[in-house]
Image (cartoon, rainbow, N blue to C red):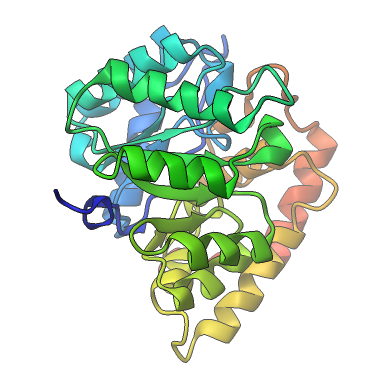
Length: 307
């Protein structure tokens, strides 16, 4: 039996934003170009259709087609992580099986998120449904904890039970609860054999010191080098300045809806309107909001060679 943590990903796998056409379909060319640019910047891989990528706003067919389009346009399947989370476990099975059969090394999976107040046993059963029906030894599944968005979280009991039942499949935990004490508690309880990855960038340094080897980060869409240094070199001479820069970056989003604002930064960087669009129920920034974001961004400044 190979410990799952030996197969867990390393480095930065940005939680990719999803560019959209005027009809709010996925802009496959821009999506692939963004992924390839991140890989060229030194990212270990890229993550499609997580929360930052508006994953639950796209159908199963749309997500399958987009992953196939990424691979067809030169993104190696081996450097893709796909969030295959759906409210219906049967749809999660279909997306997960599709990703594994394409050669994707990891799937990020939320607990079913429509019903609230469900028991630990119900969450365990849902994950078992997925793993048992995919029934593929190549599957590496990353548990995804973001209760402030999903409305359903993962207890230590759920994680421990799934790890015991599927030690070769459960590879890690993405904790996006934005609660450092919770992330540290997960690391102390499960790392190793699992790897705990945080989505909240101010906590990267702390988890790096505890042994985390990477991150799935929204800011890494445009500051991948900064994010990489914080988690993989938490005690480097540049770490204090990098930590401060992350706080300054997050401050420019205050007062804005986060996903549209992250896309607004991409639009300023790349000059592409496809980054300004979001799927309902999210609402794009107004012209005045985009102008204010631009003002804040120019005051901060981004250094593509260093950030």
